[in-house]
Length: 361
Image (cartoon, rainbow, N blue to C red; front, side):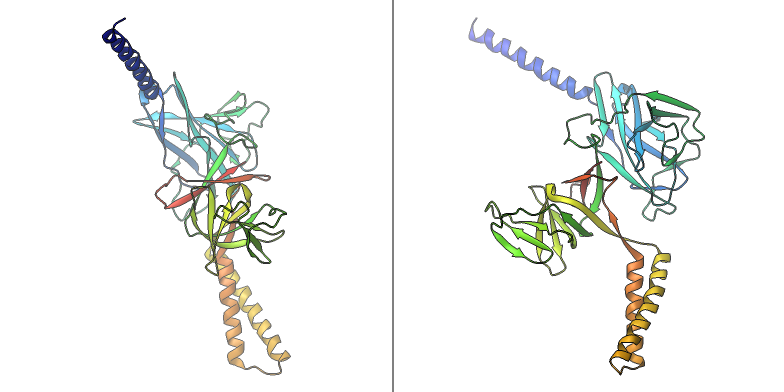
């Protein structure tokens, strides 16, 4: 075979492979969905997504479960114009949580959003920063795993007219993902500079490359990499602000004394985010703080055989302020279910507006 013929044959092979690759890429469904981490109590949440190419979609569904169960239920999505829409049963219980993801299938593709993850939603009577859209009517059909109760825990399913039993509902991720207890993970957005507190696994027994050692934590550069790691000691927590996330998958925490510590994802055992509470809790906290501050200052004045009204008023005001602050804010665990494990990952807003915490549950 001449060189010209060989080049022509190679060109045909390469172009054929390129065409096959382009076709495979074209066959893959693309799911776009704007998640909102809050759903209104006793309303029907509506999940909307754009799935392209729309004409290739054979079926789409929203797969979900509450924090009270490990069984994944599902509702079908229907096409409305260019969008795909599904309605979930009404979630029950103020402060409850549920997780969901979107799954779509075509002849040559099975895709999900988020990829190898699930989105977590808080249930509240008032979603201060916006909520999932709602529908006036609940789902007519509910997919139920074989052996699971028809009444999905955490949801009101009394008005569902048709229950469809099937095998385990897509508990495994569509693409390879880190091994987890139930085969999926959940992405929760944690805004940068959020007040957080953490605990970690036990530090290594060998004290190598110790940089700082105090009653709460120890920081060591065990492998002499120039990237020291911090561990909390038994029964202790570290509290600070979630400042950043480095290339090695470690959380950078800025402590109250302005020191920065680096915590590896695999060492995290708990992470809590400080969130604003309600005005009612703030009022109750202020009242409790006022009483505590008044009597506490009075006792100190008596013990010191002195003091005056100014000191008493100052102590009372201090107690009221501390009580109001404590009542108006709460520590919320970034976790869904017990015996969970954590790993940090970039969240949906990669420009630095937020960082996600991936929680295996």
